[in-house]
Image (cartoon, rainbow, N blue to C red; front, side, top):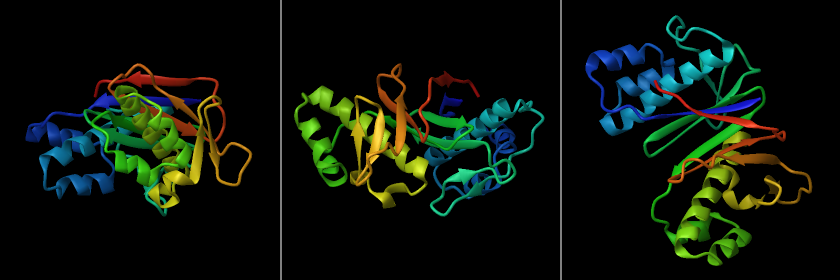
Length: 222
């Protein structure tokens, strides 16, 4: 089973509320928050930490009000994991007014992108020839939607593998009909992707190594 939870980024909080939220955030994120310089950066980081805590508690059926922060480890390229519960897999993303957390019993990668103006050179630089050809066949609005769908699909796959942008967004193709990722030189799917369709101003995607019958998408209040 795979579930994706998302929440609106906290507004700037009063000190007491900030410290109360901080109690549920894991060590590395807490240190980053306490030494953060800009309030704009602090709010998404804090929200992501609180969302992760709530989602892990929900998944493990623990009361979040009674649970201490979880110990979080980080892989070579920065992918987070639970050292004490390696069978629980999760991934985080943030864009615009939302943070999201995917969780499951197998590796996951998730990405959310707020749709803004598209710079054509970004697609030329990062995407494949086939991607750019598909974009060139679209009208302006359709091209913006497709660009951010491509970006969130590709980013979620790179987060699934844990290699990040080092792997390169042009090292694999999107098979739109089958909902699969095909890496260069491989005939079998490297991953399967599922998109959330009820947030029209965002592109929102989760990627897994095994095909899913269904994915739970749920907004929660923190």
